[in-house]
Image 1 (cartoon, rainbow, N blue to C red):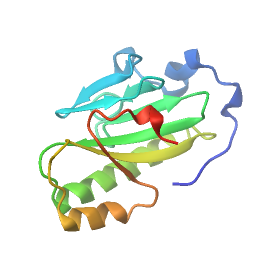
Image 2: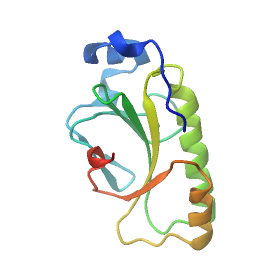
Image 3: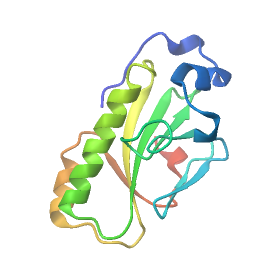
Image 4: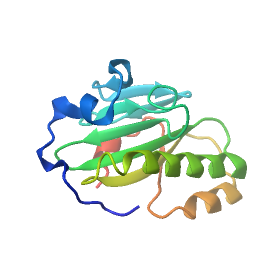
Length: 148
């Protein structure tokens, strides 16, 4: 996903809710969010629960860091991952990118596929995930704030 530049340099943390039109119960400032049997850990980021809270489709969560001008688009899958699951995850991440690209214009978007630790990722699922440029595969519970 391309690095985007734009007009948001003067936007402050307090304006996140107004800028993105997000309900209060969708913003998680503690740096942790349990979603679909997986745990999103990102201590220095504000985590926005997207799927089922902000919109009815798209990725599970978006972690935003104002200082780094970075948004992590996160999709969580549990259990063994098939090609169908991987294809659906890629589609959800792309939908999430389309939703936020105009709202967070100066941010770098990093898509992340979060899977349950120790669960199998089929060969064709790997190929499907590798088809999305810039996608990172991480395990549930990994600290996503350490991504460079």
